[in-house]
Length: 349
Image (cartoon, rainbow, N blue to C red; front, side, top):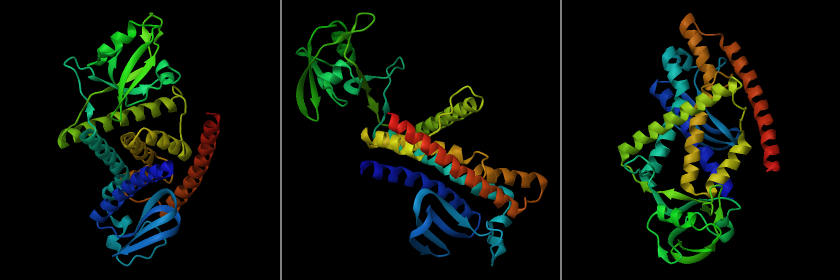
């Protein structure tokens, strides 16, 4: 049930913001909007407000904003409010606004995280300032076998009070193969956990834990600036990966709805902030994906508008819609193939 609601939250957030971008810019350009829908297929719920119907549909695989003039066979009462009668640059803004809102969503999510949870505090040397709280436990490590858990705060080792992570590593590194007694604070309770460090290649004792960084909360403007910087950096990394994948320098690692839900479930297990971080990452991915020049996506519609801008007249709407229809069918086929591959990988885990 946790996975279901987490998936509804993430997918709903991404879809609503994406379609909201199209909707807001269409209204700003004076275009009549017939319908704002979340999902595809039969309508489950409708809320008429003015000239627009707000719908919730059966299949939660996306959404759409239906504007006057986008259907070449539609009879329009007021041609001045038709999508196709607006200047090309206005239409390009309306089409690209969905992806733009996905980037804005990523910035807002990250800014909220940086304000509430914080960002890693740095030492004067520019290194993360570490706490004595366990962030991660290595699977099959002495720490995991002894019962240490993420979130445990190490407050003493062998009865000696601990004040820094450097003290933790020093006492563990110098005692390979020796039983040590960790005193930890877990959800307000004190527990004593015996563990035997294993020697590494250099002979230092290791128990298999990573420390949590000290977090520093940011103010609103600093958080927005940091969220913007992080979003730009993630966008650049994704574009670079796509370039390497197209050039054959990186494996074609593409996930569909099943893999995304699996990742959402994993993120939800680590807490709400991890789920928000994943939502921000997926929002950037969705924004970029929709800008690709693939028929039926926003990027393809932008290509037709660029052609119209340079040739001075639009492409035949019937031909354009036919191309989008074929592209949509191929896109659905691709999703089916990717979903099948995701299921195979899931069952092999």
